[in-house]
Length: 233
Image: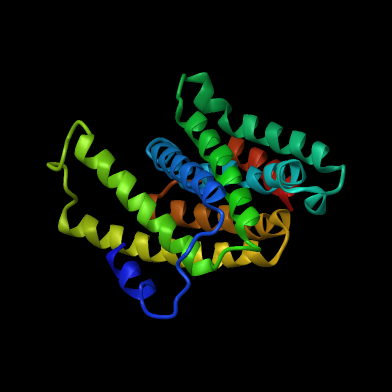
């Protein structure tokens, strides 16, 4: 956050948020999505988690005309695709649910929160500057998570190790770059189109699972993933 403040609080950069109400919703749902996603990552393989979140383009295409207006309307077949995607999600999560695991439900929570956060981004697109949205999102996340850290059960004693700090810095840098690109994309095109552009994510996640964690995609994940990604495409 400090580096972002230095970069964006330079003369001539637009930093004002005009639609503060929608921005507050974007921040709220964005924080919810992050919390649910990182919690789900404790118990789900990266590929499984990525496949579940591939339902997001369908969800966005379904909700966009209801929340943003008729200009965001998608084809009526979106309902069929939503059913196919949900079936795929159930197939993928079946083993987890059978043993009473709740990690998959956290992933679904991340999916819903993220979809609403992306719709808020699209709603702000015509009136807000990309850098301003990303800047104040980072500031808000920094303040809220800092408060959570201070008030948490471990307080300030559970600090990351030096190696973990390197991973955190890398994650933060890439996440900031992703925020800039995603925010700009939603300002330029329909929400459903932008959301549907990330369907290579499960393939990347499966490769990372295999190479770094020696986790092979299960049959349930393969079948469910085909339904989810197919419907999203």
